[in-house]
Length: 150
Image (cartoon, rainbow, N blue to C red; front, side, top):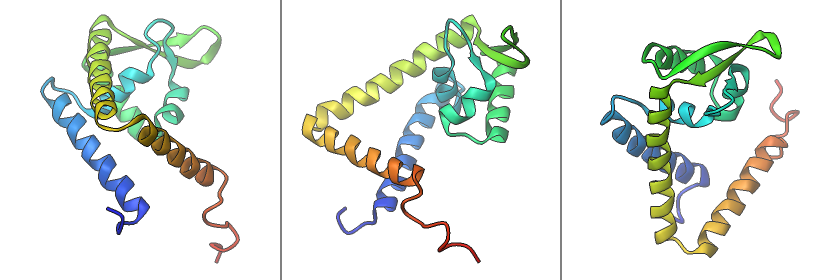
């Protein structure tokens, strides 16, 4: 894979992970996005709907569609935020908590499998490189904004 670009490796690896999770989720009439949302909701205190998009890296329209689907399936319920009358908290239903536990089990199984096949040093390097990439993107160190203006 050394002759591939970094973004190519990231993209194809993430697509493979997404496909794997979606195949598992489909066995239980679900999707990776739903599982990810379930894992992003605090099972005891609920989670503000406005906090979920940034937490999951999802656009508001995609998140809204996912939450509507989850609500229709009885996985979540929306309640007014007692600390902010304009806001809404997302809570898991009992059914949602069961599906969350299943999603968590699948994520932990994936992590355990990777940890069994990669050394601690390899994983440390992986996390270090991912952090470098994220920091460079967050700090806009890859493409100078002035260079891209027309």
